[in-house]
Length: 460
Image (tube, rainbow, N blue to C red):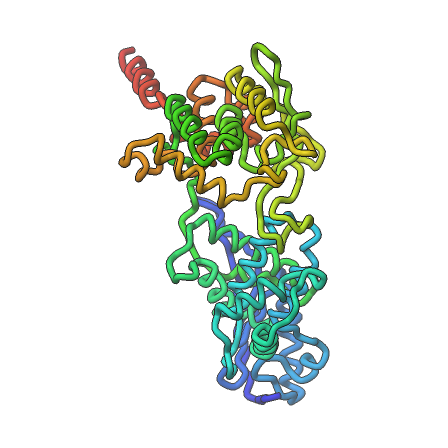
């Protein structure tokens, strides 16, 4: 242990967070600051009392003549009392603790975010493998439960040994420069370009939750992110109205899908129709079963959605397949969602069942072997269908660029048709506030109506 007797203490710093215009900033934490030799150190606490107690302990140790460790900044007595884990060891433990409670997509996002952070929370150490090798070692081995890990290779073994030796202590995050470096890594893509604001916020949420877990385990005194101000523009989240097809264009696309391939397109057409006429998410369409469908010969039908089958890597699913069966998004496990469907979709689904049958478990949309369509296959069929349905300038535009845009078109159509927001939100499986924010730019006629009402008021 490299140590020094040259210690200097500073005043406790109060960390605040703005509460909005005209409001007094809220105190979120208190930071103890000191130097050991040439090294600046800090530790952040939620309350002033904890910070003062910690600073008092440091001062008492200095008065007793104890040497202070240059790396941790702690006196010998406190260093012995506290075993400090590395960030890498903590991250592995965090993934294992939260894995059983997360959906496949959440697991994938969790490992992706923690991998980005782990690669920057390292010190200079000889023999650093390529970043791509380190990512593979983390995502395909270390950040998986033991029973899911593949056989170790020499390359992965060397990468993990390097990480164990080079990873910074978890407490290093109490130094703002390391917390900021981690956030800046989350704000970039692998090619060095800035990530979308929504992507950054999603990854930051994972990192924040991991640090809250460290506070809960008493391995950190407070969440270091409360002190770091890395401002990113808040994502609007609105749907691009240029991507929304009208009913005529939607029907052109559905017809075009049937011309793709000998069987793939015809077997997928009803799935795309369910996304447009019923506003289903792709995972909800993939999980739709015959028993969920009330399809009368005349009039409106009803889909009672009960399950969804989102796609993810096999590494992250409970089933070991690319599609896990789960409850509906934002709902309790066994909660259902009724979706009335127009006669046109009723006829399409009836014809699909009659022509293609259903899978052994009753699912309507599947390959000839009974499996769910892969996302890559769906995207290929959709891309080819757009080429058949649209002229070149429309193909190059955002118009229905993704199958998910059919759902956006459905909800936009409902709102523009005058369907009350709560009813539209119930059918779509949204909260009313979220739906109105997301689809605000797709609701037509609002400006003209507002102008007319203003003119009427001015005429008084």
